[in-house]
Length: 376
Image (cartoon, rainbow, N blue to C red; front, side, top):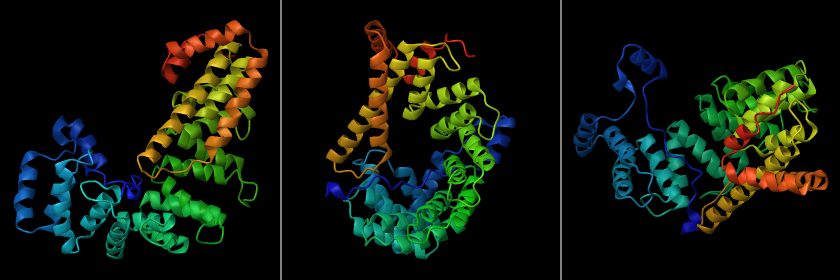
């Protein structure tokens, strides 16, 4: 049954006080305003759950849910969720479906999980609509149906579900379950971007760079990608570095290009590491440093190897993992970069680069060790 487990389904996030309430609480010195379940709340839920309240049964299950799939708390959570689900409590149906999909506290059963998602989705639960759409997209516990998946993504997105809005935008971009429609894609990406979703900002920016987009605009692309970069998204930071390096839609600035690439590289972005490697090799925006260039290429290779090992381990454990088509092209770029540097670097420089990587296990430390390079 291990092969039925799918950890891509996530449990509902712990409820928390609204951001503004937390800010006001901190200003007033009420540190305990951070949203945590208090013992007296749990005791009240236990009493109400025993009396048959589905809301209390759901809240109690949410508190009991443990990160350890084999924990007895998970089994207790499933017990309470089943009781609430029998009363057609939509949030409980959805959460029970997620636990069953993940094989957490209960035997994994994709078909039953999908049925629970559908029951809760029909009742209007946006999280369930989103997960039902994903099940339909992946063929998890049900026949794959991209057109129906898009319908449920749209329904969830219409309720403000940010990830669903992002999924609708991607569907219209790629023509999954519909005809490609870049205007619709931009509209849905913008909905998610306005909810401060960094990934949506990034993908909206990329959409404006597409040559087949009648609304293509370097300025709009720069606007949204820079927004995503400032939110900390590594791939957006790399793309922003390219904007500054090329002078597209913004005044060319090699120091800015270097700085944004370094931010992305510190988050182990492979393409950013390769970009910095080229800058160090040529001394563009920094002091020429072939040893540093080789060290960054080695770190990129190490990151790709670690990623592949994790995927292999997850597959061996029977877990489904998202496919990443970009991995192969990045691996080819890394191999090419190492060959290029091997042809020009001295043996002593390559040895020093390997020592740099060994002495600085984190990429952030490695970048710090190269910092004495003056930026031009």
